Length: 311
Length: 304
View 1: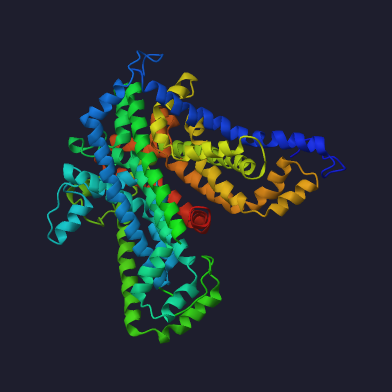
View 2: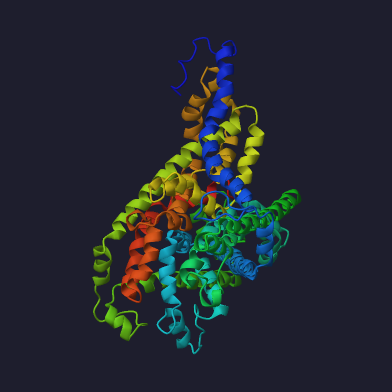
């Protein structure tokens, strides 16, 4: 822009010196602001985490504290809390990803078929997605409440005695997962609707002319052509669920609700770092958690490359 | 599948060209009755799910206009005899929610604007400008997309604490700015812009900054709106990080502030639901206004 001197009258390859200089500095200059922020708030903290995970660093004392080598890792890997919270996190991931993918695919297929009012369904399903998590939590804490809650009431109308959705350790995590599905389904739904509109009609016509019925067209044409979307939606959801904290903390309550049955891995990091003030140990758990997510991403990368080659 | 008996051109976008739709509507005569019944069934299932999705919102609304005393005696009734806005008055009188809105608005808007500028400039350079280390840099950024911010809260907290930025807007904004995903979306969009446009401008003597600001950015508008919408919504809904850095009530963002109402109102459900409605409704209204843009932003760019 105006930052640079007025453009030379004889532009083009002739104005070599000026162009070369711009050429050299413009690129790095444009990346610089991002890079600076990136180093300060991503790479820096990652490096700090790695270093600190080898020390017994505390939140309240300055400095790194005593060097403990890999002892933090040993402690994490043998800690019951670490494995419990990781298991809750994985279970939560299953409880959200499977319904989110399956349900939004089914709803999008139906909406595509019905056609009419598609925008209305899109609005209704997507609207919760823009709500702040605390509003969602307030509403669902009440919906799930014992005795006075809407859910127990509705189920009692059809003669079902329901458990304490948030007070029973077995049900607290599925309850939070269901609220999460309600909250975020619209996002996946919209992605599927868009992908469905991209399927060329002549492909379906060709399949129909070849005698494929609706079910076979669905199974062998439509669903495979949504493969990329499904892969993307799945990995986005898995990663979002693995780092869950907000709604579990808010709906189940801090500490993970009854018997800590809903404490997630990120909450374990939070508790170790900010309640126990053990920054070194929290960094260790963070890093282990990051490795789990990296493994998931790697699997996704491998799978999506294979499907890309397949199509 | 839906096109089975009413072939319609595929690439009618969400904007909906009216002609093909009407053509589709004239045809259903040919549709076998079994298929039509199935379509009806799909419609019914969709309606059931849509009602199910509206139920919690309706329930919150209905509860928020009941007096607390009535809720205690008959908690699961939908409509009381004495609808009242007392709960809203009490929430608004507490005086914080307006401040929380303002805090959220300022932090989210700043995060959005800075992210769009910084990430698009970086993406443009990574996509079009030749310089040393470009590929390595791109890989570094991509790797960052896999690092969840949640595992970095402890070092980020220590960092901002050491420069005395806790309880400021910048504490909320800064760690959200380096968005690798934004760079990724911009880059894949800019990659698709014809190279001749850039080459022609370069041949006319335009500097890279001019090419970026005058030629590429105007063509990148869909990516800009996608990234802007995403960044705003994510930032608006960010919870864990503002929870850590905003400890004073007057600096809290809306989600953090709302979470504290659970403690202050206890079991006064009308107030709790009124808080939820006040916290959520404006966003829903905003969404209804910008629906097309938001949905196209999500569906249209890179993320498919």
